[in-house]
Length: 260
Image (cartoon, rainbow, N blue to C red; front, side, top):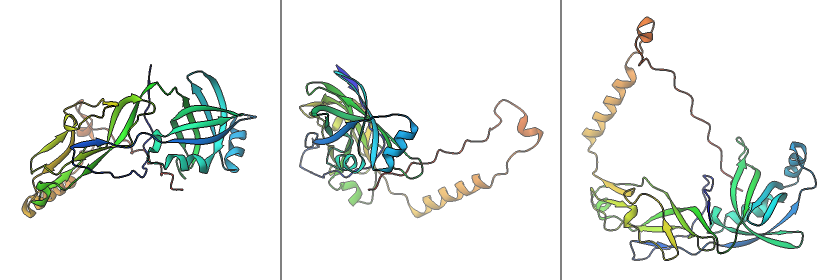
């Protein structure tokens, strides 16, 4: 059985273990005990009161358990996510004298303050396979960068399939041999013995681009300035044809990360 799992976009601290291989998988996922208790009442009012005393309302569901409304200590939950495993940490949820192995599936945050509002936990079995996101870490110094090239990293996370107890903390990608014009791709990452990388093999991980001269940079800036100064078409001319531009929607506000 495979359970799809994609953690929310949150930055965590990762251990940096570089070696001489093109890539390496890091220490298997950590396991942390987390005390939880069943919620005596549900609803917005009860959830608000729980948050006021430092608790995070949560739901536990999945393999072998009935959906259960629980609550956990907010600081203890944040502490669990600050292990090397980050969002992939295995949680031993201690509820009513019993223990349930689970992973965090979704975290809801306050859009303004970034504080945790609710968590979903999925019960799992140790032999069960899951799909998880793990971070990519570029290690080494590119020969192309030493020659003046510009390093670009278009891919920061990769999807892997593995047993729930074998999720790597991250994958190192050695860029030392990359020269100007070279590209390191997913297929160049040496797979670990306990997991499979699911990304497109041709997907670029790192690229060393040729440096841009001052003249080229000035030309690009001048061209961008001309485009910005172009007058907008107004009146009847803007309404003619099917290709008339529509106002762009404002981008959604970014949620602040939990920094406690």
